[in-house]
Length: 215
Image (cartoon, rainbow, N blue to C red; front, side):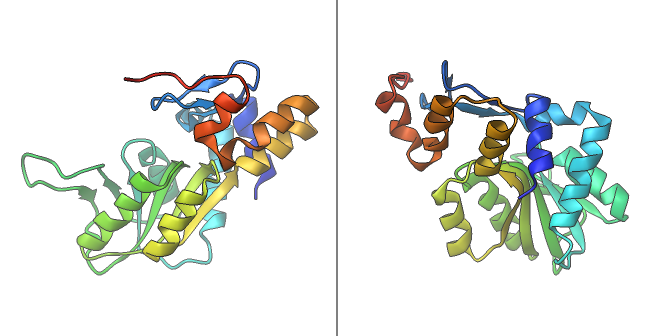
């Protein structure tokens, strides 16, 4: 996995680690990590590094179209297509309820090999729904490529059972290792953070951070 991209994400605070005062997810789960890769579109030099990493990660796959997931995957797909001179599409989370009712806009994916671009893989459900959308439209998804993954087993299982390759530029364990090397985590913080993705639901309560009641 790409340590340099992990370091860039940490330096630009697209991914933050905080074991002392954990973040609260929308679900109420407490987490020592928070990822918002959309911030990276603001940095041209680092943005170029990530685009090149996307291309490198997918170089062994034959694809006709690059499709970005709505909304965070769209700018990355655009930059990749511009660099490779490839047709582009983007995939909504669901079909439009008006007009033509399309879920996929841009290039026609029917009978085409499609590479799907994501910014983040968490549980994998929404990302795999994009794969299903391509298949429903008659296309073949050769792989989904994301900047970062939390390394949840659930995501790996969804893609394996769904018969689609999941690729990521960097991941949770690599980022934590980089944070340790760069002195961003104490030994105790490292111990706390490194086990989070094995049992995120119970991580907070086990370490003195009750999950929030979201009703």
